[in-house]
Image 1: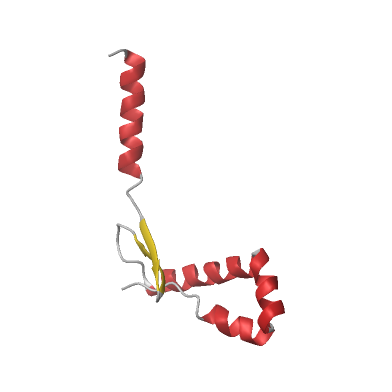
Image 2: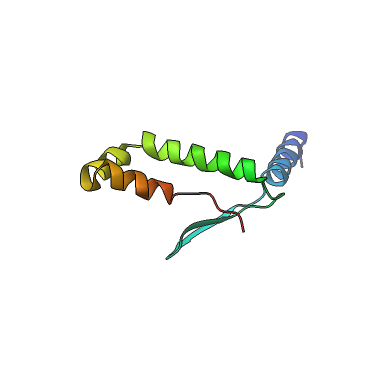
Length: 86
């Protein structure tokens, strides 16, 4: 095996180690994700929830939701979109 191939293989193996697998799925309760690592603090979970909700507000679907159900109901639904850590 040439130097270049060995170097590329080492880089590929290093990338695999740096990015552990993330598993996601959806069921009746919503979207779920399984991510390796330490449990985030309550403050981090709140921050992730705020960012998640802000991203929903910025998405093109937000205007459609508001148009369908009204701003009050849309905000109520948005509050249900939270990051939860079990």
